[in-house]
Image 1 (cartoon, helix red, strand yellow):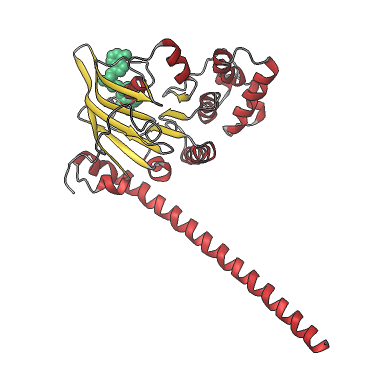
Image 2: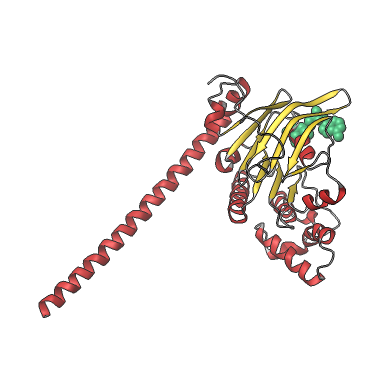
Length: 311
Ligand SMILES: Nc1ncnc2c1ncn2[C@@H]1O[C@H](COP(=O)(O)OP(=O)(O)OP(=O)(O)O)[C@@H](O)[C@H]1O
Ligand SMILES: [Mg+2]
């Protein structure tokens, strides 16, 4: 394959909203003369974890901010869950904001509120009618869902480790039972074991809650372990989107050096090891099952044989 973009052919905006909860067409973003995005197209499929990669400063966070309506683009259309973000009315806007959760790059927890109070902020905003008791209960459940111990609910962000703060941010992102989850560098600054744990948490939440996840990351292990597809931002647009093997096959120099550099190779090898270990575990479990079944059959035969003698 050549260096051609492998973006799917754009489907007209306004259609297939169920299949593509996020659709961006012809996006242009700029700060003064500094053009960040130009003619950027992207589709995010329902139920996928889409990794978003690109060099530092290529506009990954700005893209996310545009999609959630925090950065008004110069040109283009952005459709989220069937609504045009670029011209959403206030009431539409509120409706849509309850349907997504966001973990910002810096965490963005309120430092003067406890973890539970942080999770309660969106609940207070969008569901002011619910009782204090129910709100506390929901917040506690979300904290536990994000893998934090119950004691963390009453802690302030400054009392938590970096990894715990990420989980606290995730629990707030999950507060409103979102359909869409935006994660900006969720594993940055975590040790490899903490990062791997966070990856698995995202994967299991995505599977159990049926989420669509827009995940900005520099973490190659995360890309290999949990992303269904990866979108690459370079030259102010999405230059390619696909599975990692599809991306590597494009021969684009940045993509090649990203995935085939020493870190990319290490992540690939680790992913293959994990897959091989999982396959071995499955084979061992299957063998154990077969042995148990064979033993049970033998015992049954023996019992039948014995009773046959006796008869
Ligand atoms: N509010 C702002 N005002 C002016 N320029 C901005 C603003 N926000 C972002 N930029 C510029 O937009 C460009 C893209 O920034 P962005 O934060 O999206 O990069 P990124 O791809 O997320 O980088 P990183 O991987 O380092 O997080 C950068 O050059 C940045 O300086
Ligand atoms: Mg960023």
